[in-house]
Image 1 (cartoon, rainbow, N blue to C red):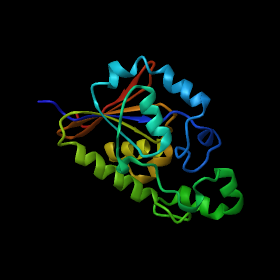
Image 2 (cartoon, helix red, strand yellow):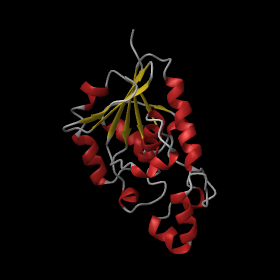
Image 3 (tube, helix red, strand yellow):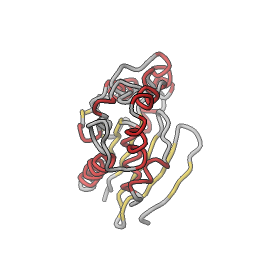
Image 4 (cartoon, one colour):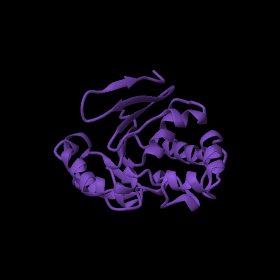
Length: 201
């Protein structure tokens, strides 16, 4: 019997991402991002072309999928975190005007100084989506955001929400998850050499 396998891919870079802008996927890929996505285009069909493909609604995520010749189904549950009033502003800009808010946001996963989504809410949202996929018994490729992949790892490893900030997800990073009887097996990989951490064997 086929088990559910999910590959979550962080979208290719955008100028906003390079500037550490909140909501950095809500813009088109820049030239460097397009080149980076296309550089993987020859590998994507063999690795992901036979999978059901879903994407965050963000332009950068959809364009990353399309660069690989994929036509994704839009999935709101894997959209980026809602950063509220901070959306479109860089971290430096927000830190200059609301340093206390940024500090609370980095320390307390239940804080939403921007008026948007808390990290706890994001982690729960992604966790519900992951759970819903376990009955699909198919391979899924999901083009999404670094924050969503962090949230997926927190769920898969059953880690505390504070572990969110201990995870670093680069553009075009790939997180492989496979459903198992004791939870998710987690395999982190890039286009090059891979390293694995197992859970739920």
